[in-house]
Image (tube, rainbow, N blue to C red; front, side, top):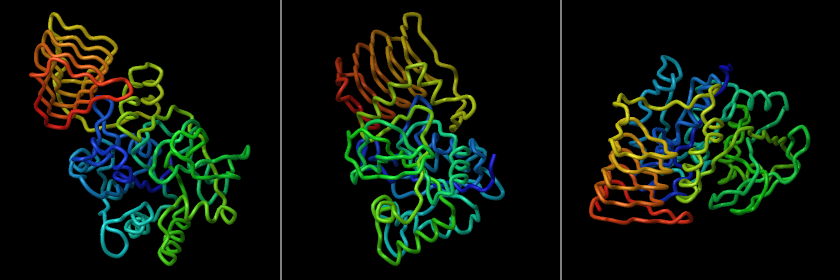
Length: 370
């Protein structure tokens, strides 16, 4: 493991892609997979590489994120030196940051004081198991200025174009790149990248003096002929989350054993906040098929192709299928649900049928009573 890496996590940068789920929380604290938050995957990837100093850049609605992470003990980040640090949402100068570069300008002092050789940056809208140590080793050996982790497939939505690599040499050097729109098929960045601290600080100084706003457009693409950009292909499956629909699809992918093994690898386990709950309880007439059931659930009805978070209750004579039900929600008797995303602490009793569709799941807001 390496001890010369600083981790920077952007917890809010993609909130606008999932407006329903991020109305009362940041993207990093969106629940996922029955017991996790999206930030868990970014933190776990960093910690598995030996990173012991992680800065989390916040912007808004981050109270639940702070409650989830607290001192960072679950990720072995409750340390006398280093550990986890929440970086305020203020940009260089006055006001809340408006883009990634401004966010980094606000974090410049933290990056400088950490005194690490390399900085790894990661967003929270990708679920994957990345070997960060291997990524940094590859970057170091290549002599690149900056190295992006990338995957192949359809480009996700980013509101401003996705950085794609249209020509990559056999050694990983990016020879051609462009910003592509959602749905274009290409090798594209997953917003995990590494650079030396020296390069990052020089880039921020240049960005300030020239009023630059975009890392991809103003820093990388505008200076592609002057810097060495490399790509590192992620070996594991990558689940992209850029909309409520893709969140639903990514969650349903976890019901496949192959995806589970790929995402929750034994070599790099996904860590999260531990809660002491009783095991799930199943009634005499309960029927559960192909579902992820968290601890503390009480199941008396039928559950198929679902993900149930902690302390969910499903009453008898009720059937739910292809649903995501978050923590503390209760489904009463004689209710039928299909293709729904039910947020935390909802109560559903007077709605015999609530059906979304495979292409448009129905979202029930946090704390709703129906």
